[in-house]
Image (cartoon, rainbow, N blue to C red; front, side, top):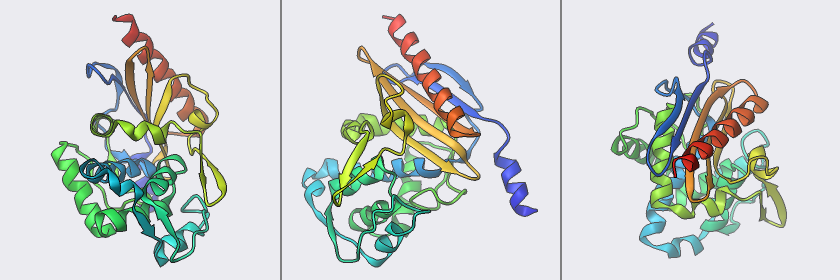
Length: 261
């Protein structure tokens, strides 16, 4: 019964937000202030924290990360990762793991990155919440990959995070816009069908998220003629709804942004 009550608390209405990245103009919003679980979109906060370190020293991208037992075990779990099947002691560059985290939504790569760059999961969660407080987000984080339903953010929170990430680490799109990535000799496709199937012209990210309690979520970005818009969809009932709503928001946003020239 408690579990059903948790689900009913979260799974009530869908949340939307659409805004112009350059001007901050909100073109559409609904339930944008409601905090909800966000699934793997959580990894964008990890990307932000890693980006802060990379901006301090770009040589970090070439550093070798040694895979520990936890990351190796997660990489063999089809329910939690991209199923890279990494082995303990193997080494990969920070950049390769960033690609896997942001393109294939790899939990194992996230664990490895966090331990190498941020120290530990506990330290990383503390830094995530400190960063959220600095950004004045209403959300809260309890893990680094989004497997917990208690990683909660509002659509408005995620738009703020997207703006900060894009402004401070514009090279994020070299990862999130990719349809696939080559890792350990295998091809891993983007976790976003909108990206990997080229369903939305101009779309270059940012991250999908899926969890029972979260429904289907997407924090999107698209650009046309120099105008960028950001969309958020939280708590869609299935991938078809999530993708359709995201594409519709982005198309409308780009129309509005370019119309105002």
